[in-house]
Image (cartoon, rainbow over all chains, first blue to last red):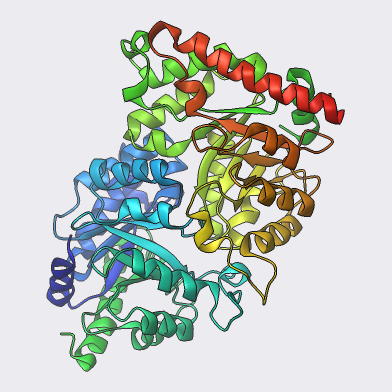
Length: 274
Length: 274
């Protein structure tokens, strides 16, 4: 999905919501556990319940790989059933040398039909560029993450300071591609840091994890990160997937998605995005 | 496989060789292409041809994921057929927050039976610690990689210098676990840098990619990285898998492995490792 289509979907749904399908077999609600592929069946139901409120769906691949070949099949079946008008993210956090990165690009873009793949920057340019320059396809590079461990290395001062590693990563990676094929992960848990990333890449989309279970505040994220196109994909996984239990799981998922979408719409109206 | 067993295998095989099973369907030699699972069949034959010269086998997961569920099945079938006395590495370069990292540890250690997983350090401590503290299981953390892109971020001076990012990563990560559950990736292409990693972590095992196709020199690697236990797992992938063609593929693979093993044995004899 190219940038203009993505922005059009944001305006049509009046939403910046990315729903994370980090579905665990043991947490699939009761009615779906009787299906032959409980994870795939619950994913499809969640998509049906939230699709009109959602811009993107993100698949955390660890949750599928943990199930082996069966998990890979759940993933493939879920992807085949996805609506064509949503943006699909493989949250893979891959990062490897050129010939390996090309294999991953082939797997995620060509075989599975994802629009975007999350990529770790530690191995540098040849780990990232195989994902770039493909029309409608995106690398989403880890800039600054939402977790406690982000402090270990991402905030080290580099090159004599005051720039920190994540700032140098964002500046540098932005020169390898463009705002048409590169996004950055910028966590919700440190809004001032998110604002700094936005300042450095005013036009790039940012994928923002960490709202909800990890403690990030939605209004602070919207304030720190939105740009004239919306410019954010704000992820919620557990807060939607497990909003309710039993027969209330899907209505509760929709209510949780709607609450996020309404706050996003209000903020976008104030900024004139919609 | 615990540290003592790994060292015993090094002494028994008089080898530091890790064979990388980065097998591509299009490069599987002719006699194996007629099998129902050509990649799995060729892998098993390569293992049979090289097993007595080899300490470890490394699976670059991108090559299997690129094939979808079928690739995952090739991987599982290859793993089921592996001898019990070799060290098995999932070259996955994963790095994600705690609950996701735990999923990966579950997938690679518990489901697939790998001894070790390569891990990217960018997300910090909670991306690494879920792989630590499991007897006989290892995290192999990216320290300094063999590729050109390593120069982009790994060599940035941090904290006012002169330490560079990879040095701080190695120092820091070494405090999270021990030489019994942590190894580091240290590329073969910059022997002085490899020597610096060895100086900082004298007892840790180092996984060394980049000999052969990427241009690293084996003797320089042995000189820079060996310690009293051997302390190195030196990887060769394409140089063994594709050493010959057609019916010469397996004899040529064995010759290539033997040549590496003999150089390793000679260096280990000089240092008194064997």
